Length: 324
Ligand SMILES: NC(=O)c1ccc[n+]([C@@H]2O[C@H](COP(=O)([O-])OP(=O)(O)OC[C@H]3O[C@@H](n4cnc5c(N)ncnc54)[C@H](OP(=O)(O)O)[C@@H]3O)[C@@H](O)[C@H]2O)c1
Image 1 (cartoon, rainbow, N blue to C red):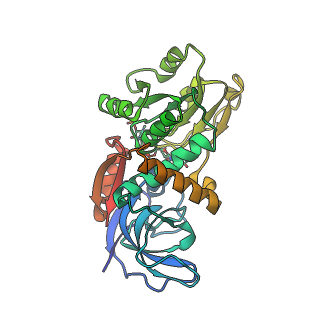
Image 2 (image 1 turned 135 degrees about the horizontal axis):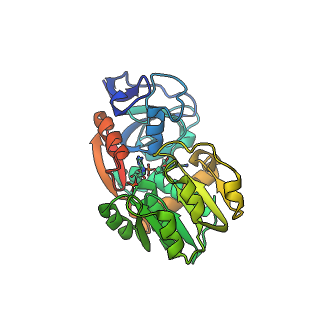
Image 3 (image 1 turned 135 degrees about the vertical axis):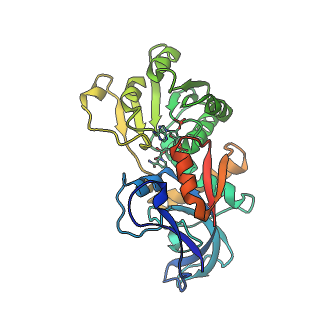
């Protein structure tokens, strides 16, 4: 029987359990039966597992990203059997060998891009892309601050921003990650576990601040991130691995008239045309080597708990993926 990972209750990585499940069959109209070949691990999966985000019902199969081969299609679906496709969707359920999924979530993967690279990049690059170019309109010469610049999203965001001609200041927690952040293209790297990053940013920018801060760390960095934004600049809070941002005084952003947004990929990929266009841009950037997705580790599906533990302990550089 095919394997899946399930979660019955919130908790640490240990609540991820491997089970055998019945192979799904008979896709309904509009659905596809997909045989996964590679599965993306995203911080979102950790929020669902640890309870930062609520789960509609238990048991649940985590995961919102997968690459695979179409095995069967329901009525009204014109994707050929055998086609290699990928998806990033709000509906959890990718940590498994076979999945029934709505065809409108699926995007064809160019043959030139291997499955593991596609899944290491898709969600994270779509995220970096919409945050740089749709939540904001990044222009040549502008300066941005990217937290966790050696991470999955942070690494790809740095590479894209450099291609767009921006100046990138990256934060990381260790010397090893600082090296990776420089390889991603960061012009300045701050080891924020050793230095006060807001003071460093103000020093680097001659006390002006940056056009945009991308804060994917949350509780530990939020206040100081506000301090790094220039007058009328933008703070994009993207996630909270260090914990949820507590309530704050709105006047703290009034002093410099800064903008604040907390966007999600699902809203920016809701329109199927936008989703498709962004996917095409991401695949083009991979093909042209504008972005070079880095795979930190590939884990067998049943070792998903190890993948989560490595990400949460801040050991990872780049993306982690599961192989069913
Ligand atoms: N809003 C959206 O649409 C969207 C979509 C996808 C992802 N995201 C967000 O983007 C961020 C990056 O996601 P990712 O999957 O690429 O993960 P990741 O960056 O590969 O891993 C998270 C990184 O956060 C940093 N971090 C700082 N404090 C931490 C703590 N207490 N515990 C764990 N990590 C900590 C670590 O980098 P250092 O060791 O260098 O500090 C760690 O490597 C997350 O916040 C995620 O929620 C948002």
